[in-house]
Image (tube, rainbow, N blue to C red):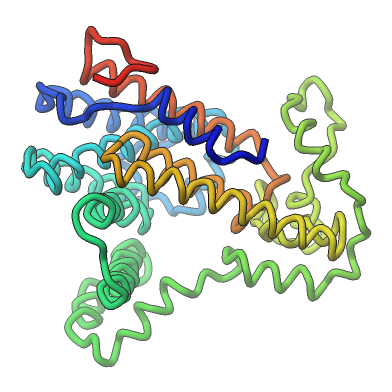
Length: 365
């Protein structure tokens, strides 16, 4: 169970993929781009609005509508996000390493910018377009130094700040204010940084500090939340009185979000279930997962395995975020399962389109 090599060998056996032999990528590129746009449009139609009407709908309204249709969010938008991420990584590999299909990569980045604007998501362009290019460049071409990483960090924070200003410009800020902020960075830079770093009660670690400030409102749960992981897979229409998760209960007690639930990281659930022993176990689990995906990442980088590289980046980031940073291990574990399912389906779709008549799993060309 705790043998890293077993998981790495499994990944090598089932996901080795010779991307260099890919052909006819132009038609595939157009097909996937249109598929992604259609999926996003379908998602917004299902939750009660349209992708092309997003500029007139506030993001909190969209979030509440999505909360009323979680299956559309998990399956349709989740699949579209995953398909977009995998395809961006593959095109980034072609454009950065093989120096091919750069026009297609530029087109895809424009599409991602379009979707980011209409989704109102500042991070979508950064994580969907810039992050894949940086990861591919750093992983397969040239390692980035400390100074380069620091400058990239500043650039990303600045870009997120500018996109954040653009996002709210139609409601709160005029175009003149945006131009003033951009042209007077020496005096306005703090505004841009704070617009990114100040996440109100949506920040995980401020939430964690808040919940520990009110820890006397909670009783020790003696491991119940880790058992409750398996109960979450039972639909509530079958068991109406199914126990709610710790995150949902904490949100109710502290009067935070009315639906869903802002997270507190796995530190809170580890403490409230097993006290100091839970914190030690949580640290061990986090270390194990981080080392595992680091080894998968290094193998993929050294052997130029783009699909395994994407697995290490996408699945590894999702697990680390959901287990150890965001909502924690016990809250909505089903969502992580759907992330993996969406990833496998999206990956198989792309492989079918790239290698139409060849064996897909367990085979290296």
